Image (cartoon, rainbow, N blue to C red; front, side, top):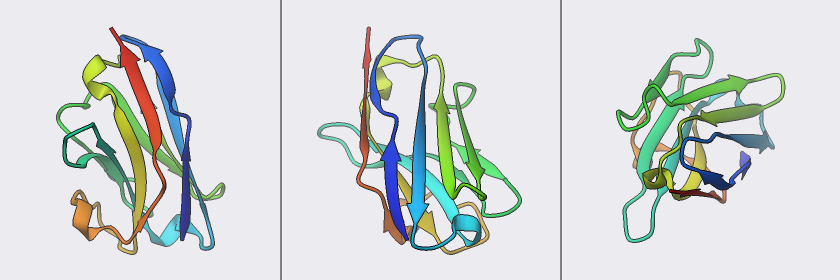
Length: 123
């Protein structure tokens, strides 16, 4: 599975961005999908994940109530809607895929990764 993340950019605090992760090579309907982020000097951290078919989601506490993860299997795409952005959301955001039916939140459990898209939030 090849993953291509897009939609990053510069936003003001309180603003919104929607990230997309387009997959190719295989249909993502058999994959749990996740979003992670990595700020300079920090480890990559979990942001959100969605199961492959039931749409069950999991979000990090730091983004609950602000971010939403969704998927469109027909378009082979996963989305991360980010609202009420904060400067601490600034990071490179990565999408990832794992061949499993359950929601997976651990970086090391994912099999495929996209190249990342930069999100910068100004105060």
